[in-house]
Length: 297
Picture (cartoon, rainbow, N blue to C red):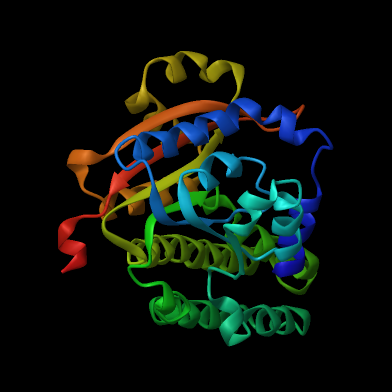
């Protein structure tokens, strides 16, 4: 899973940092909305930092005492902060982590071996379901040291990157070992596991936020097509309706889980077009919230 994500991070346009300028500005405005209320904070955590192309780390470093960047790909994070001024780099701590927690139980290797030897679909599915039932415990252990640690926790377009693409790539390599109906059943089990990973992660990250702290997220929710323009221009409710039909399931689940963790009275939602590369533009939703007081009790 780590190698898969590293390859994804390295498969990028040379001038992507420039292409993503407007997207990065939108992300920065999410932070500005929080920092306008609390101009200087102690600790910020950004989950899924990757190459850091969507982050204005100089801006953040000027307004907080420390920034923790979390990602499975240490190399990409190191490259992402390499060109920063020394004062900003000194405030940044890189945390190499598989936020799913699956690596702690050897899931990658076990699943690969099972598919490679053509284990019966029912056995594979049961293993995936058993893993799903362990996620809460795994996630709690993974983030235990960060409990109530940060003033701001943000997730960076992470929902669509968690587990599923890697699992589907792995299944494609071994699909000849299974009849089509078994492949579909295994895919369904993967989807269930992915959805629970997203929900569990959102809850665990909320526990990392200090009392009265802020929770931010931004996520690509669908690939923009010309025929979607009318709905996109109608506002956030129309965008969610559109996404429910043609959008990314992981993103919708992630946003729903996020909104369940924050105080609805202080929830802010916005959306924008993310010029991802020459072939793709993604409709992106950003959200700002404060953790429900009841979650801290």
